[in-house]
Amino acid sequence: MNGLAILLLSSAFGFALAQRFRLPVIPLLIFLGFVLARFGIDLERATLNQILDIGLAFLVFTAGIELNPARFRGRTRAVFWIGSTQFLLAAALGFLVARLFDFALAPALYIAAGLSTSSTLVVVREIHRFPGSFESYGRLVLGVLLVQDIAIITLVVLLRRLPVGPPELLPGVLGLAVMAGAAIVCQRYLPKLATKVPLPDEETLLLCTLGILFVFSGLSHLMELTFIAGGFAAGFALSGFPVSGEARGVLGSLATFFLAIFFGALGAQVDIPDSATLLRALGCSAIVLIATPIIVTVFAEWKGGLSSRSAITAGLLLAQTSEFSVILAVYGERLRQIDHNVVTLIALVAIITMILTPFLATDPVARFLLRLHPVRRRLKTDSDFHDHVVVLGYGSAGRWIVRPLISAGLRIVVVDQDPGVNAQLRRTGIDHIRGDASDEKILLRAGADKARFIIVSLPHADEVVKVIEHVGKHIPVFSRIFEESAARQIEESGGIPILNSIAAADKFMEWFETVEAKEKEPAPQG
Image 1 (cartoon, rainbow, N blue to C red):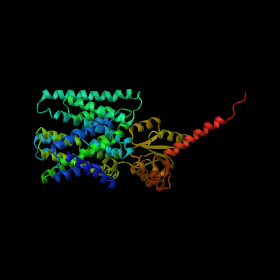
Image 2 (image 1 turned 45 degrees about the horizontal axis):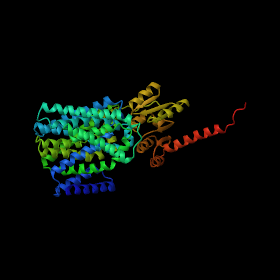
Image 3 (image 1 turned 180 degrees about the vertical axis):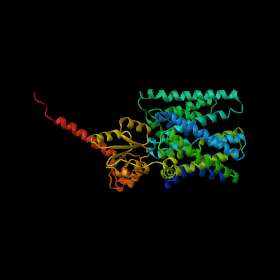
Image 4 (image 1 turned 90 degrees about the vertical axis):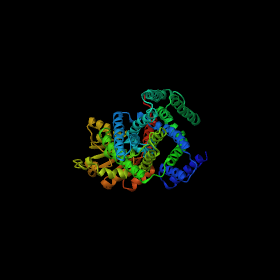
């Protein structure tokens, strides 16, 4: 108990450091847990295993709430293709590398499974840092995470039954099927009932949310499944609820608590590796950091319809191993199928790749890798457009912008990366280019430097600034903006920001004045 208290104190210190110096909190928590264990703090391995199990069960519950299939509706086939292909290819590469490192068959299989899945906790936290990402690659990434999580949870559940053989595998498969069926039924049908009930207060909502977690956890215990399966199923069951956003809010503090103890316990699990284990961990980490972005980029462009930069960013986001990898290794050690050196190796790979994700999954890195993209390097930049209007980002408001411009006799060229949007524009006969609206080569193809003016609807102010720098200040660039700080940044760069709040207020006043004028008109005589 004293060890757990010290672990929590160190986690609080880690959060304070991360906030003060704007550092990623997860690597700090792992490092502090590692330091505590090295200084002989009373952290028994059995206690750490329990903390890992309980902490991860709650964390996958909160992460499961994010994985609502409705978010990637229409991309289900692409999600399945990318998720399953990445999982299988990464596992195959991991197995080959493990065999090259002279690991026996069982450890090689564990290492292969450990390298095949990405961290839902890390990726969801990174996606929430960039709200606009949901409109491009974020939805597809969440779908890939769902496919990976289902695959790795299935492995975790069936792992304990493998030594017994087929007689024990069948109950495990049936248990997973029952759990999945219950989660799907709740996710699909209970929201309809919830809309007929008034939204409860925060305390009642928290109790109901935790009640669903306990019900699924109890169900997993009755069927002799891992608590992780119950936690994930409970989160998925809540993902379709209209109150899932409120549930995330009330669970925020609890999620932070379990995040702290999980990653602290993860760091404490890692022993100081010998040189051979460290080199092997670095080699496996290199496989994850190189192979995953390539695999995801290729299939995200081919099957997912993403632009090159969004596909690269999605690949960088997924280029780490999962917290499930460590739990899988811990179970393997409990079953005596692998030794603690393999657990240390898999944990080291998770730590190294998780630490690097916030630094690699960034726009500058994606833009640098974009220059190496073989297809983009051959992209033609010739353009016959001139004295036209370029609309960068069609979005939900694009049609209301484009229609009056076309009615005024202006030629419009729309740049958008969504294949569905481009198909719609093709049907309406509007000139369009599919691609990243902030890519210089795409801007040249659209003739942005010869346009009459440019209308921008992009999620990040930095992208708008790049457009302004590309075309120069002699071409007016109007940008739809949500925050005043972004508006100032664009105005200082020479653009013309249009705040959504001001535009909405002006539109309302225009409507109100019209209605008021009609009411003041004299009634018709006779």
